[in-house]
Image (cartoon, rainbow, N blue to C red):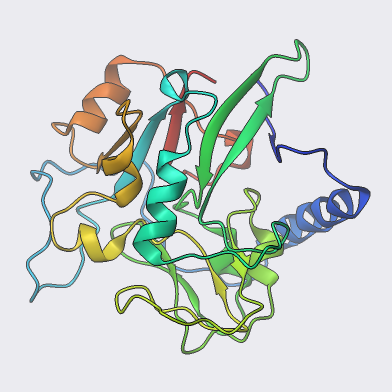
Length: 256
């Protein structure tokens, strides 16, 4: 199935122009130096666990999600609300630009017209285009696959937003107050899902997965063949959104 993430409302012509530019940028992005990436097909056998506080993250672990869209109820937004609450993401009455680290999107099969709703967030690519195009190195990927933004060196150029095929990043237009200590934000910078890295590093699961009443979001170590997520992926069909881009996503879906 060829699926394209789309907004709930019809996309304006301006958005189509942005998409066109994004595709061109992706096409030329290969010439820009990129960050080191986990080698394809590399698996380890360690037990899924959080790292000790005094140890650096390791590529022995790759964190990811398996999301079963069949379990997502049409009117459910528990994961979105949990993300907003966890990171204190408050809107300013401007849906077009307000921060959305997770958003509900509708996928439409171009041939049949069948639609499926699912949560869309940063896909934590093994080969992230946002990292490739960042001129300052603010966008980076940890060894365990979590893609983040260093607020101290982000200059707000928004190249990463144009490069992301999943529209997963937001630009902060307003002065931010009441920030969470573990989730720094700043006017004039870009931000996106952090996979709740502050929780993961303590051995906890991301807020969205914890909040899902249907357990549609499974979090775990993709490099551990014994983890629940790896075993599900080994025995049940799953797919990447826009897998044709060969970005080796950390988020896979079922039911689409």
